[in-house]
Image: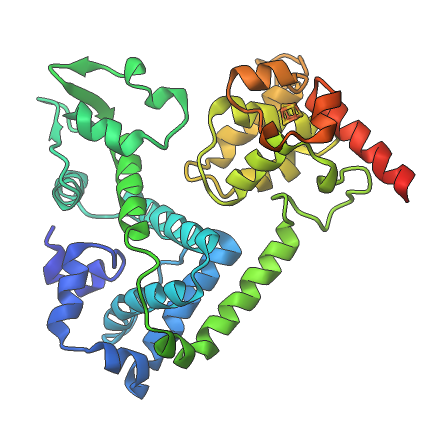
Length: 361
Ligand code: SF4
C-alpha cells in the first residue's frame, strides 16, 4: 500500500504523515484555507468533523465521489484542529481525538487492502517494529516496550502483559488486536500539540464556525449533565448534587474521557445501580471512555447489576465502603467534606446529603 500515491485513501487518515506531506505539497497556504472562497467546503467539513464527534462520538468517513473531495477532506483536518484550538475546551479535544481514532480503527478493520500491507505501513508510521509469526498470517509480534507504551490506557485485563505470550522480549497479538493498538497510537497523535497556539485575532475571524460548535457542545453538556449522565431522564431521587466526592470525581473523569482504573469503574457502576440508574443510563456514561466497547461494557455492568444472563448468575454487588475506596486510592475526601466525616459508606453519604437537602427545602 502506498498512502502517498493515493489521495482517495490518505484523505480517510488525515493524521498520517503522508497526509500532512500531501497538504504541504499542494501549495495551499493557511491564508487560503482560512479565507479563500474555494476552500469553504473544507472549512465546513472541518466544523462538521467536530460536530460529528460531539453528537455521535465518531467522525464519519465519507464515500469519495468527486475529484475535489479528497483535497477538501485532507484540508478539513488541519482546519478542525485550528477550530478546536480556538475553542480550547479540554473535553472537546479529548472527545474529538477519540472520535477520529475510533473511526479510523473501524475503517482499517473494514479496509479492502491486504491486511499485512496495512499492518506494516501503520507500524512504520508509528515507529513500531512488528512482524508476522513465521508461517502465520493471523498473528503478529511486537517489542514489549512498544506494547507497554501503547496499551497504558487499555484497562481490560486481557491487555496486561502477564496475560500475553511473551517470547524473547516480543509480545504476540492477533492482527485485530494490533489494529486496536494502532487506534491508541492514532489517538495519541491527534491529541498531541492540541490546543495549538492560534492568534486571538485569527480565532476571532473564525467565530461563525466556532460558535456553531460551542452551541452543540453546550447542548451535549446540558443533555449529559455535569455528573456525566443523561439529566433528561427521571432523576427525582437520583440527585447528582448529593453524590459523594469520590463518585463525582470518577464520573467527571469518565465524562472527560480520562481512563479510570477498574476499581473506580466498579465503584461508580455499583453505586449508580444501587441508587436506581438503569443499565442503559450507565452505558451512556461509559461512552466517553477511550476503550469503550458497548458489548463488553454491557456485559460487565450487567454482571455488577446481577442481571440473570445465564452464565453470570444473579449476585447483585453493593458499592464498596469508604474503607475499600481508600484502600484502592478512590476516596476523594481531600477537602475534609463534613458529610464524609460522618459516614463510612458512599451510599450513606448520598442518603444523608439527600435528607439534608430535603430538610433545608
Ligand atoms: S469518605 Fe467515603 S464517601 Fe467520602 S469521598 Fe471518601 S470514599 Fe467517598
